[in-house]
Image (tube, rainbow, N blue to C red; front, side, top):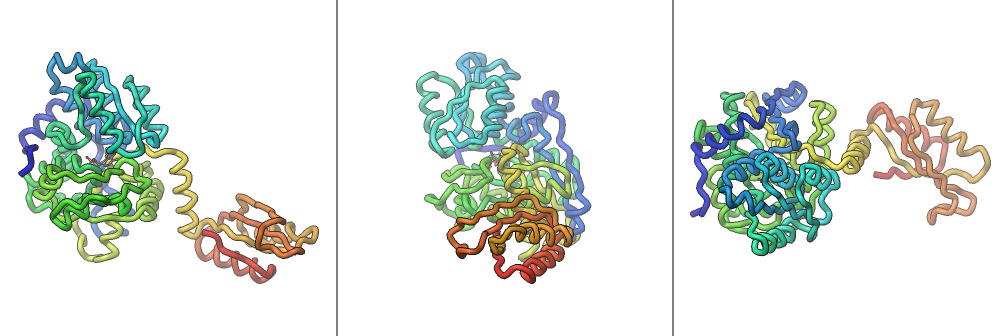
Length: 410
Ligand SMILES: Cc1ncc(COP(=O)(O)O)c(C=O)c1O
């Protein structure tokens, strides 16, 4: 039995309190994704919240419940980033001082945004768990109220308002896919939806590199000791608690994990096909739909599937790497090493050849001293933009035809 209890009534109270402060986020049907997956795909755009993530809901509701005495003592929280911004935003609304402990590797944008919202930021540890230990120490030392990122009835009720909105916006919903960090979002969403329409399928997902909770749900017992390695920094949680496991076990239908390559591809797809920016944790539900569709293309046929796009606070450097890698994977960009003779004019011949075939060179590195080149050779590393996989193959064949050695780089 869980020591936390959250029901539909609490989630409805949270919705009432938050309504004057937060606009409903859009639930958008996406035609391209719907056609690709043979079902109606809807995106719940929590990346459009004022802090760029749903975490604003739970944190603000929790802070609204503080007594006057507690408000004076202030709040403390540990977070990889989005809960931090939620607590900072909610604290500012209620005139409460917030101290946020973030891991030292938290994305710069999230650290800066949290500070800009008026919170004091302390950088400690490399994981959420280490930051949390420091937040507990501060709680003891100062008497500030610790606002937990997920294991808290009010926080869960606040996150559950996402579920209520989905039910209002799409009463015919058949399935909802939600990312798990500690599990607060999914517990709230699933509790709200199952109370109103028990037949809706609730699918929980994690990144394969940080999947202790999915493993625990599937094995029906706590599986600790997993890793927390994923670029989806919002859901880098390693520790599973009895409370969250038991809450989630009661309301979800399926738990799945998906690897970082697939999550990165989903970030790119959302940008291109939905014109929306998602961070890793926000794009994970799409990566999960893609994986499940590959495993069984018929399972969602004709159904209404909601992907909760939880946040869009992605570091621009990470985004730029995702775009680069995505273009290479999609065959729209190639990286090759070409070994050419070290005679004057040969590099010119190579670039002319690429130009004549319509390739656009983005980068050239000419390295005569590379370890694998012969004495009369030079290695030329090229990054070339192409029109797609067929054009890439044509270009590679043309280069191979004229120059003796070529290596495709990934
Ligand atoms: C964008 C995003 N999605 C999903 C989650 C998972 O939420 P929870 O920890 O409540 O499971 C988080 C957690 O920070 C997040 O930032």
